[in-house]
Amino acid sequence: FLVRGNRFEKTGNYAVMVNLGGIKTGDILTKITENTYSGSKVVNGICLQGTVTCDLKIPEGTYVSNDLWVNEGVILELEAGTVLLNNSGIRYYVYGELKLPGTEEKPIILTTLGDEEHGQEISATKVSVWDGVYVYNGGEMKAEYTKFSRLEGTYCSALGYSYFGIFVQGRAELSNCEIASVGYEGIGVTGAGSLYLKESTIKAVRNYAVGVNQSGGATEITNCTLQGSSY
Image (cartoon, rainbow, N blue to C red):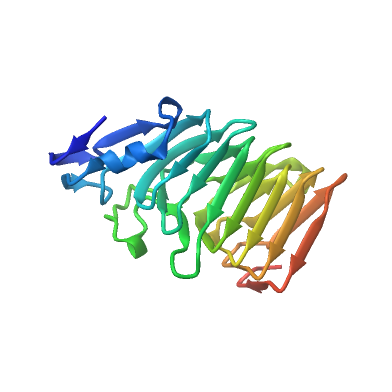
């Protein structure tokens, strides 16, 4: 597999679509290189989507993302410095493990297609929000120095019939992260879900930063900053 030295013109949203269920190593993405894009909505023209069925590491880069499913027993990892520009209404469905090991020098950014902060084109009809991350029973997310931005949220009747940018029924560990510009609520934890949140910031959420309705599990929130919340 090699896509190199090509010129893509007026491709609309993106020039190359990669179904993650069809690849066995993230290295394949490094073989989409030295191409030029004119009229594309994203810098490198690559869109990721699909179900991850084997351990996979995504190399540092800027990508568009549609729905991503992480199967049970499988690890999806993003390298430090990776930017995912999410399409409208998409979600990460985590049944396995999602690893987001950003660093202070190279944070991981999860935002929307059209985020001017990351150099993308802006259109009045393009994406303003995405649905966020849903960590299911048995699933796990570990994030360090990761910014979750422009989330609309996942609906939950057990927590006041509201929407949460990060919704946890499994286990989530977040350290030195930022959750910002959430349409409704920040993080929701239900059932046997567990949340370990430390040295992180939740800001610009419409209502409460963290909602908990547990029948098991644990919630630990330490040394965090909450800004711009209604509650």
